[in-house]
Image (cartoon, rainbow over all chains, first blue to last red; front, side, top):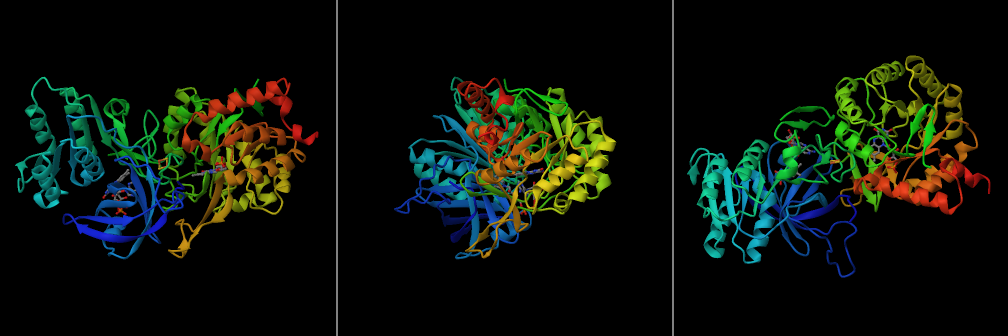
Length: 285
Length: 299
Ligand SMILES: Cc1cc2nc3c(=O)[nH]c(=O)nc-3n(C[C@H](O)[C@H](O)[C@H](O)COP(=O)(O)OP(=O)(O)OC[C@H]3O[C@@H](n4cnc5c(N)ncnc54)[C@H](O)[C@@H]3O)c2cc1C
Ligand SMILES: Cc1cc2nc3c(=O)[nH]c(=O)nc-3n(C[C@H](O)[C@H](O)[C@H](O)COP(=O)(O)O)c2cc1C
Ligand code: FES
């Protein structure tokens, strides 16, 4: 794979919530096209793309859908200029894709929980769908400020009915599901498991403060493997420029991560506290 | 066997981390050092914070060949003190890469770097996609900046040369005359990638610098030429990804080498470089690294 942007054409757009749009497209990374046009790219859920908007920016966005050999989806929350421009595109229009990059979630056997806050559910979705395809029944905990912000809510309700996944959701304003914080719901869900059951994994993505709480909870419930996907400012996205480093281990979020285990995160004093800006300046989260 | 000296700087191994690769965080620098580097060069640091260029700023253009225009993004020397401290506390040998908008600024940054415990200064007068490349393109200005920085610090001074010039030997000679302690050759070669579907350059800065595999033969030739023209140590840099590449630079005349782009794959490269180079020295019945430096010139 050559990590250079390649222009793709948008095939489908889904307006998931008032601020989150999913974009679907066919894409074979540069250097992975083999003679019969098939992609040979390995993909692990949790990996991300650098998405290029010519004349504007290139930003990291997780893969939220993958159907081999070459059909991909991303889900983008509008927070600023680049994400607004991306979500404002139409079917048939183009943007550039580089990747997939980084490490993904280690998907181990059940029972386990996927815990997403807001657009944080995006990188978890390919892992959840893979579990469903393998006829396992993962537990999914989804949370957002209000019902209108619950990402993939309809899809997971359907998976709960048709494939028997355990789906729980909460909103801070109580407009949909339980009222309260996602971490409160997570505790309730963990308490539902029979007391002797060892939860094998908890995979989490969302605001970093939520992830800090989720790690505390995972340790309290003695979850075997906690994994969380982090966000940091990125340039190269391939472990070269050093901008995305988290201290004191000097790990690169783009290459050693974005998914890290709880064991590693416990040693990262930056986790939940510090992020770097584009200059390399470190500021409080 | 692999010890080498760059002026008063004594290195356990001749493999140095190049500037701008993983050089943002003190803890990453320490990690690279302890993975087997003889020294590490920081990201180029200036007097004040700089945002650098927008993304895309680093991309791969061919396998293991890259194009970048980071634009000297850095938090400024005062804030970078914290990162230097973290690296020094872990015993790292750190060469601080400095740049300035004006000549005096080089001196100011270098002075501060010495105070915070840097082991040497590398003058970045060669970034191909920023204004400062004009210093490194001019023999007179190169010697002015070397003299100025020399007068402000006691640290060994290394000048990093810009390959995008008509006569790099002339620039190296004028730096040597001005008292520079060593030379790093080379920085990236100017380049551009245009996306034929988007019909525009891919990098936000439009043009950038080529690094990685493709740069190697260009860099080897520069080192070879400089070895015949200057007496000060030369640090080879450009496209090194295994021990054979490194040995090629030693034979061309480099006393040490810097590794940049190839690090994205992992830090194990430093152990492999040391192992392979040692074996080469033994198999070729040389005593040590010094014995093979410049050997290609004798043939
Ligand atoms: C590994 C990773 C995966 C991500 N996955 C998703 C995803 O699936 N969906 C989604 O909506 N968002 C995702 N993000 C966040 C997304 O990259 C930012 O929201 C986006 O860059 C904002 O750009 P903007 O111009 O719209 O906003 P801006 O106004 O530029 O910035 C808003 C905020 O976004 C962040 N940001 C800006 N530029 C970058 C950059 N180059 N690298 C990292 N963060 C940046 C900063 O925290 C900034 O404060 C991910 C980030 C990372 C690091
Ligand atoms: C992403 C990136 C950032 C760089 N930043 C700097 C820098 O700040 N200062 C500098 O002197 N050289 C910088 N360089 C150039 C390298 O130090 C080195 O000279 C060049 O990459 C050639 O070596 P390589 O082929 O081993 O990468 C940078 C290179 C890359 C790829
Ligand atoms: S973004 Fe460059 S090292 Fe991670």
